[in-house]
Length: 112
Image 1: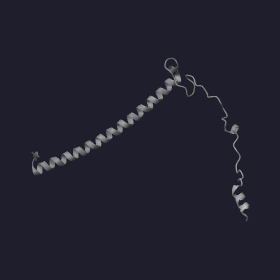
Image 2: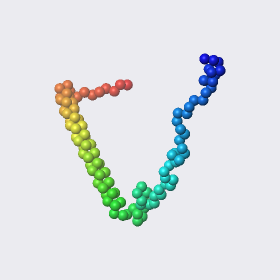
Image 3: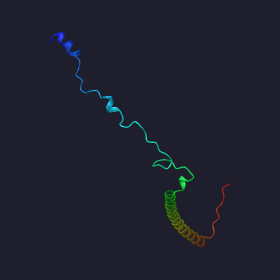
Image 4: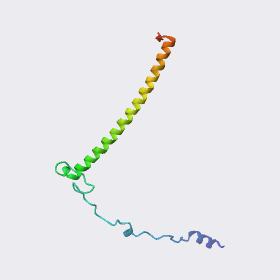
C-alpha cells in the first residue's frame, strides 16, 4: 500500500448510517391545550351553587360513610388491643399479689 493511498484511506469521509429526522415528525400533533372551566371534568369546583349539586352531595356523603366505617374499624381494633393489655396487666398484678403474700411487701430503697 502506498503512502498516498494510506493517507487517503484515513481522511476519507465515512458514509452516513442514518438520515436526519425531519422537523415535521418532531412537531406535536395538537397545538392547543384544553381549557377547563368550573365544573368541567378535571376542573376545580368553587363554592356556592356549583358545590351544592346532587352529585357533589352524594359523593361527599359516600366519602363520609367510608371514613366513618374506617374509623369505626380502627376504634374496634384499638379496644381489642386495650382489652388484651388489660388482661396481661391483671395477670401481672395477680403474680405480684402472690409474691407479696409469699415474701411479704417489699419496699424499694431509693439510692442516695
